[in-house]
Image (cartoon, rainbow, N blue to C red; front, top):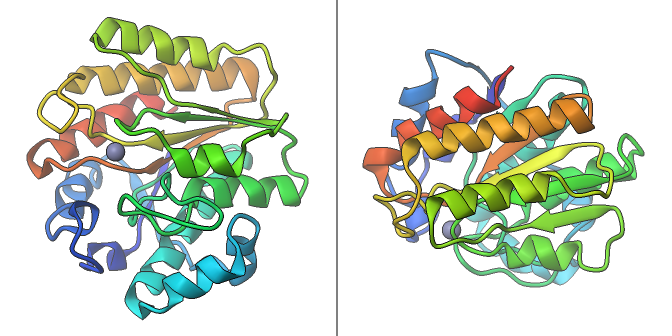
Length: 251
Ligand SMILES: [Zn+2]
């Protein structure tokens, strides 16, 4: 399994917690010995336009630094999805996150919807006909849900729960939907951890989620699966949480 990462993700492009200095370093450090890294190129404007309106793209462009890093994050999601489609699971260790970016607006530290852009690209190239998006971030990915609202082929799930066991059961239920899917895409936010904003999950729970997603992908869609980073703000636990997820998600 490959980790998709660009050194420019270290840059502090904004003043929000997702862009905070020192956030990416512990994650890179925790996984670089176990996983090969691949550098993505930027997404094209055409890639953005499959999800976002021109006005929204112009609005983001007004901050050239955010725009540049945003294109690389979207490019990282696309590369992860393409590798997954070709049979190699991948994880986009990217920022800014994307799941609060809707077609015509954004909030919550997001600018472009990385995972939606990646899925739309595979759909437009007719590589896949359907997809399941599982978002285990603490926050509901309204941008992703808006992008695919009414879609009969792309299902978006955001499990909820106030107990760990219940949450993990909910994850499993999402993966077992009857509707067929050609790829699993994970919006991996780590802010539901017990030492992060959500105060719920233990580090080992991310291993469980990774394993269940892996198993479902093998059973349902030839092992095709990728994930991208969304939230997660406690720098002192992010590294081990991401590593735990990847250890379950890998082959
Ligand atoms: Zn979040």
